[in-house]
Length: 410
Image 1 (cartoon, rainbow, N blue to C red):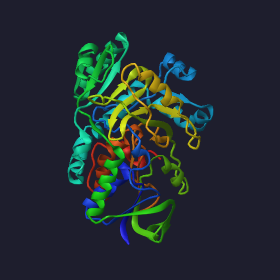
Image 2: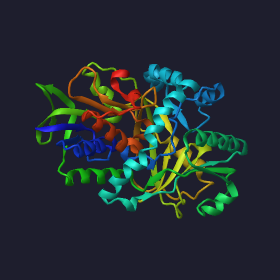
Image 3: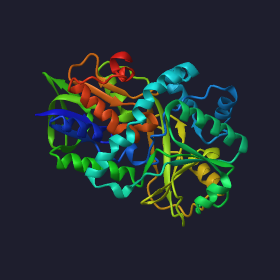
């Protein structure tokens, strides 16, 4: 019997398995699919060291009205989706007040400022350096007034947290990036972030490293988790897997499983979509077209366009309209090219109302741990929260992260 079962083989689960393994523990990693094939597969591939502050819910009436009327591609919604998440959305709104958001950001930045440092040794040991570019991310603004406001806010973020950026005139940036068809009004280039040309491959590479170090990856059904005596069991394709302790790292599927054990975890599901396109020229670095809420990121499979957030029910069918609008909007900035044939991909970003992941021991079940709710930053923060959880398991202090603990929040 292993020391730990880790349920979920996305970036968070794989990184957690590696961190526990580094503590000398035997670990079995369990997922219904191969590592890196769910939410970790489809993001924009940015290790967001620039994301000192989490994404708050806008509180000004005009922005909320634009959301409500569907006049922005940043956020789309359905009545059923908003109704299903209304209690969590209300808490999210309250936590997005300036004072509360600033308090939450003091914890969030302690995570993001570690992100590239925690990824670095795993990238090297997994042999994945060829996928990584250390050249930041660009935010392209089409409106001069919006760009000026963004520069002022970037200066505030830099003064508060030390996050590095360049403010670049649009014409200068167009000369810097020949893939652009025209000059934007201006660009904020956040310099500390890294990008990955295949997020799913990187996650799978970390899982291969875990196996080389002696870990076991098994296909199984996390929903069968049960407490058995002093340990935990899950049904897998190879029979019953057991361990003394278990970690739930199932991203958006975590609350459903935890509900069976009496835990009620409010979650906001921000669905995202991506598509790959045969762009004749890739941008020099990933960029966000702010006006159309679409990220363009060069990938091994072509130019990936990734959308913002769709607030829909967890089980609603895929809807490509947000991606299609983003593609149309960005097409005057970059030659997108033909859509590459592939199944439509969508995934849900698991966001908790206080914008922080849930990391630590379950309050009422011995040997059960949680590591999920990373929102937009699961790919970024997997190695960091995995390391923090392993420290907690070992009984080492993790000062400054009390806001993450389940005992303080559920």
